[in-house]
Image (cartoon, rainbow, N blue to C red; front, side, top):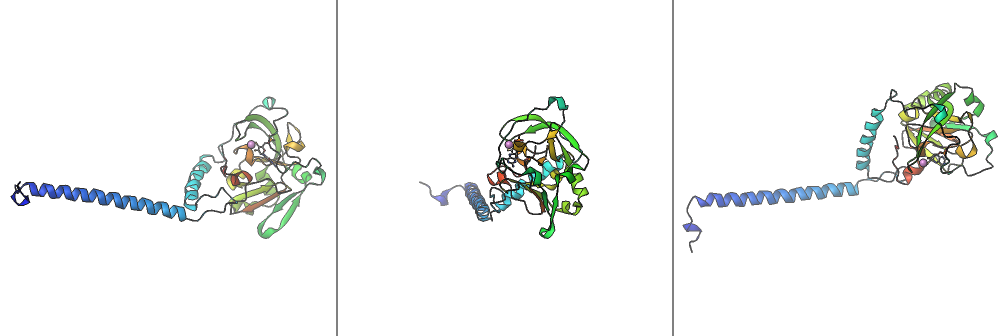
Amino acid sequence: MPNDKNKPAEEQPLDKTIKRRNFISFATFFIGAGAAFEGWKWLYHSPIEKPAITAGAHKPLRKALNKTELFFRNFFSNRHLVRTYPAALAANPPRVNSLIGIEDQKYDVASWQLQVITDKGSKQNITLDQIKALPKTDIVFDFKCVEGWDQIQHWGGVKVIDFIEHFGLAQQTKKDYMGLETPDGKYYVGLDMPSALHPQTILAYEMNGKPITMEHGAPLRLIIPVKYGIKNLKRIGTMSFSNERPRDYWAEAGYDYYSGL
Ligand SMILES: Nc1nc2c(c(=O)[nH]1)N[C@H]1C(S)=C(S)[C@@H](COP(=O)(O)O)O[C@H]1N2
Ligand SMILES: [Mo]
């Protein structure tokens, strides 16, 4: 058998080239795999966001999620309104869903007041009569629950944006979020400010032209047509403003915090 020395000269460079190519592809593979592993380790060890606020995603992932939120936030501006319908098409009575935070059948609606918590914890109490004194807006729209049902419903009340202006809360809207809770604090939602101030978002005290019934959130509930039902908090007890995400009942259980349509 001829040994290497006896190989024709022109075969030598080819042999070397193949060896070098093999080396480069193996090296590339290992470097790539190493980088992927490091990347995964970085994500795995990255801080987890406060689990009470959302379902506890890693912070870098939340950044990506927030980017998609931003897309949807920009997608509807004030010029994008939810479709409305004639009042005659509204369900009467509307469907009742869950009653978290409003189970108390003996709740004293007459002495209810809305508590608005502003900067540094200062509090302002507002009565239903004060709210009813503001211009009333009616909305008939397709109410959608994440559980898969939807229904055309008719609600009446005060636009959140009008309420904010009337009660001197404009400064608070520079914050990123509005938080709402039931008087007993058992149900609570966080809303991004642009959605809270959307022209179709109302503090509702009427349903089909009559005072809201107990199971639908008497005396005042949120109607926010740009969001799924979960954000439409029944029986608002407190309203607050913050740059941090307010706690959110269903987001804590893993549902999308934004929950927009
Ligand atoms: N306080 C309170 N508000 C709430 C809920 C709740 O359980 N408690 N459920 C939400 C959900 S999931 C939906 S779909 C709507 C249903 O409102 P409705 O019962 O008036 O149809 O209310 C939302 N607001
Ligand atoms: Mo729902």
